[in-house]
Amino acid sequence: MRFSRAYIPTSKEIPNDAVLPSHILLVRAGYIKGVASGLYNFLPLGKKSLDKIRAIVKEELDRSGCQEVDLPFVTPAELWEESGRIAKFGKELLRFRDRKDGLFVLGPTHEEMMVALVRHQLNSYKQLPQNLYQIKTKFRDEARPRFGLMRGREFIMKDGYSFHENENDMKREFYLMQETYKRIFIRLGLDFRVVEADSGAIGGSGSREFMVIANSGEDTLAVCNSCDYGANIETAKRRPHQQENIDQIEMEFAKFKTPDIKTIDDLAKFFHVPDWFIAKAVVKKAIYENGSKIAIFFVRGGDEVEEKKAINSINALELVDPTIEEIENAGLHAGFIGLLNLPQNENIVKVIDLELKNAEPIITGANEPDFHYIGVSLKNLPDDKNKFADLIRVKEGDKCLHCENGSLIYKRGIEVGHIFQLGTKYSEPLGANFLDRDGKSRPMVMGTYGIGVSRLLSAIVEQSHDENGIVMPLAVAPYKINILVSNIKNSDELAFGENIYSNLIAKNIETIIDDRNERFGFKIRDAELIGFPYTLIIGKSLANGKVEILDRKKAVKFEIDSDQALNKILELVE
Ligand code: ATP
Ligand code: MG
Image 1: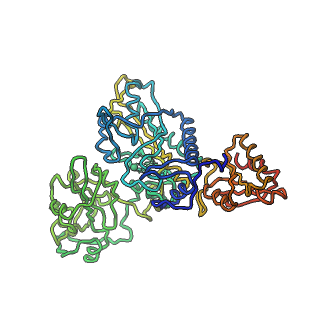
Image 2: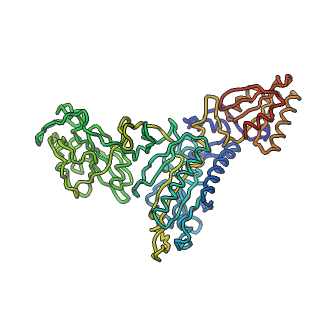
Image 3: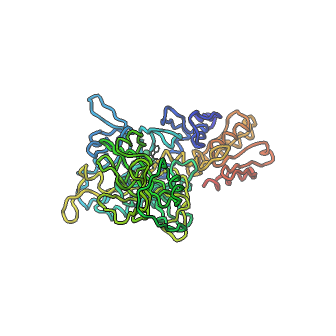
């Protein structure tokens, strides 16, 4: 490519809505251009890099026996009704009617479509397993599209689905995909971690996220500083806190007047006890498909409730903060909500953290203004009225559950992949059945595997840039080498550059020659902004048989003999 003919609109201007370096740089370097909230044009450079990411993803998947297909982006709403997801997906799902008044949705993910593709086709265990994927546009009407390609509304995802005769075979495939994904992200030059992830209502341990480590990441990870345990904070577990360094105290059961003492801190001071002995009540309004309830979560005074765990424990869609009226209408008294005498009705749900199981003595609200109970024992609480679940949001410094001496630290991550042991969640409602080895009809067991292909371009830049611009890894760079002719009016310089250029093109090496009639400084700033891995600089010293190579990643320039230039470049890019 000739830079003079290329559509590469570089600019100094920072887009209004851009805060992340990756967003700013991809726009400034002319890879992408915003259209509307969460919608982006891919310009020639962006398209080239995106295609390279796509190719690496495809190569590794095909190597692992996955097969690429291509399903419509527009999907019939009927399928979403069959699976029951049309209501659950909410406003992220963009719906519209065609000329015959048929309802359709723009595919945000393709479980329904993929199951519909194979049902009635895969009828026997003999045809299983199968693993089908596509790399394709998705649309999610995200509440807060932001950070450029990182959270778009229209974006490109690799979505894969596998079909199996039993759990074991699905697990085998799941681990194969885990290894395949690792190879992909290593080839893309990313610093990433595989972490345990929330499996939502499906439960189980069958979900892993691939997180690119970056301070700007939207996800918080808890990782062990000693072993390889890592988990999304939404699901991270710790070694349960022990009563170390806290003396056991004697407390007779009693109802105690605690006028206007509502917070954990105030209670601890008032009773002169560590917050370990106080049950903290966190009150939320739980939203369900058809209505809402008041939900109360109990943890020890020093602990916090992890929202995702809380949601899963009561199978809600989401949790929001209730108003004072809503709390009062439920018969509750903020600041005095406790485990005893809690109003019993179907509009209130209660969950107690597992670390409070059998705890004693405990101080807890009396469900009456200005009173608490002290000396309460949580031993032998009847199970039918007391649901226990892990509710804890782990903190930095908590002990690792998986090794002797490790403790947990937080890291920030960008989710670029998610693999999931799905089971029969979609095959069952959509009737994707097969005849098993005993001739019995059963729903296929599924796995599902996603990669954020367009998000990856942002993640790569987020991890690989400096104050001058993008540092594109060789594997995804739009051009491997940029031949910068400092002064195109110097015919020797230009001829030398053209000669190297045609040699490289003949060898199929992606090369761009900066033959623009611009100053050297302007051209080198563009080269650094775009992040070409190597730039061959042809300048005045060509007269003395010397040229320079700029290595963008190492940020060094070195001089070589001009007659060695071609060999050196070939050595660098191959
Ligand atoms: P997130 O928690 O970031 O919203 P998700 O859990 O909704 O992601 P999945 O449904 O698992 O994502 O989709 C698979 C992959 O698609 C994700 O791992 C992510 O890399 C990518 N992805 C999801 N939403 C977007 C988006 N709005 N823009 C770009 N990529 C996305
Ligand atoms: Mg999402």
